Image 1 (cartoon, one colour):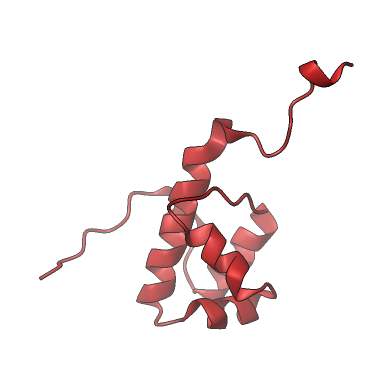
Image 2 (cartoon, rainbow, N blue to C red):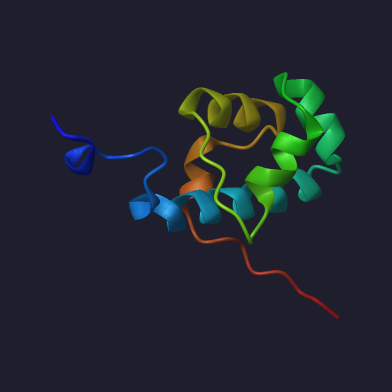
Length: 91
């Protein structure tokens, strides 16, 4: 297969899914009262990796395994990462 026909990783076809997941991770992390460093330590990655995942300006692909680990660390059912975020009262 020629290089022109191969699909390069990461594919940005799923860009919005990664951005939404990062936004959800940030929301539930803050709701749990955890810092990025605390979450990173709990799941065994660097704080900068969590920062890149949560960033709204960049796509950082990550594994489902890591998502499951994050879900457990935040004590948040994994399906909530795929639901609309709860409404918050910002005053």
